[in-house]
Image (cartoon, rainbow, N blue to C red):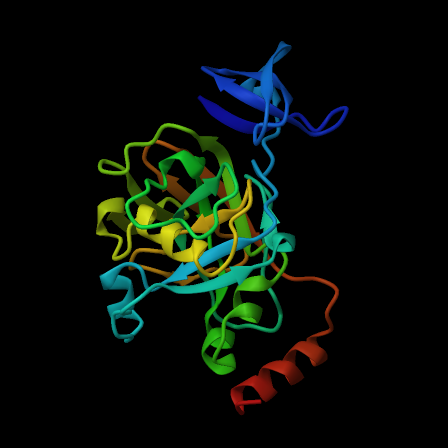
Length: 272
């Protein structure tokens, strides 16, 4: 079963992907729901981000080869950070580059969507009952700001820096799933999900001891090696085997004067 954000007319709806059609979902997929009577051909539906979480918990350096390409040591425990919900966009929506960075990177990831409240999950208890499903996330990152700031909120928090979708897949075999990232049709990233340093089960247990995970919250589990810069005009895709393809164009920023952007970049280069 796939849950998708369904048509924007007359208002956004949740839907169930059934082959090449989307059926209206009545109720709340996080509580109680039932199949509606209305359905639309998939090619006539605009897919939105499939969930709007209270928080997106990102995981850094969770693939050994990515840690190596960034010249970072392997973490002894998960490195976590937060992306704001305001950074979320859906499939086919544009990633808008910021004028305050000259080095914005793609990061293809498989993400977990929490299905019910999870707090202080004890050792030995399976995390699976707390999982609604899985989706694709592009953890877009202003790499130069990440390095200059010393913490990652600004670098990962710009509007449009969290593409998500195209669906929430409720049945994924993580032992066989893979994560890939493409730019303009060229594969840049690839790894089996089993290469995660900290597994999905471990991450849910560990994060639940720091903060309560609420229904709809998203854990983006980390990116494989091969990250690299995005340019206006690029098309970037995140492909998770068993979930689908998240595709987004990349566009230039607007509404910031070249002088303001130049001044900010100059100050950043000086370490301010």
